[in-house]
Length: 263
Image 1 (cartoon, rainbow, N blue to C red):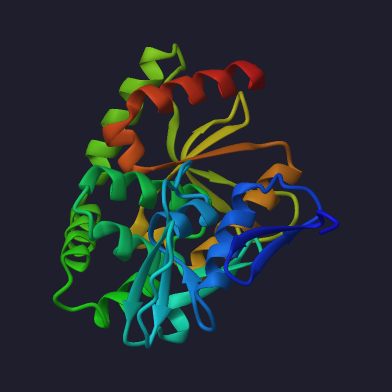
Image 2: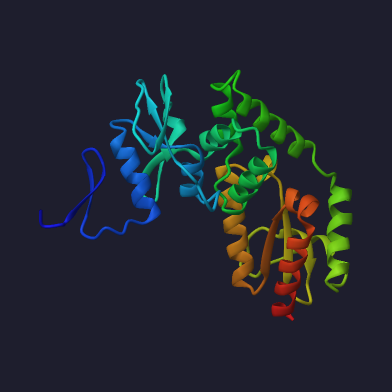
């Protein structure tokens, strides 16, 4: 009566004003679906930052069927602990489970972009993907994700990757970089070997692949290494192998911009 509660779903209200950000709508949908429910599919991908838009509200509910107007509720027998997470304070499926769920739509290019974005955000965990795939036998999404992981693992050879990056450098007017360049830092730690380096610009390009960098251990190691380089004035740019192969224009634009700043 006072106008302080605004109904979102049965038994679920926002408090205060009637303007609710997208996170609030997602949280309301989860609460409306009851205990154990989590945001999933495109909604979870938006929460994790792998998609810019989610479209409809997707929620996965273990152990029962739920039908609520405006919510795409997916029932499942159970959710394993590694299937769930909390991001932006919203219960949702984990990054790995989300990728497999969205892959059910069969849009290969979309999943490639999601995996690339997860790699850029350093939230891609290849071991977690394999763990989800072990419990997802028979699902079409699982087959698609397996094929993508397999293609990335074979990917570009080291020589092919070098040739493509050198072509991008030539396009933006950068001189030929030093390849596998060893850098001895003043902090007394182990020396660093950069994939591609311009010592005169103190600029480094690292090329990351899902197979070698998609684990928590690699995430920590990469960040520690980048902090050591940053402390001594080096700028580090990281591109996935997939970006170098399939999105060279974007790599060229970012590389040219950073090189201009460094010079």
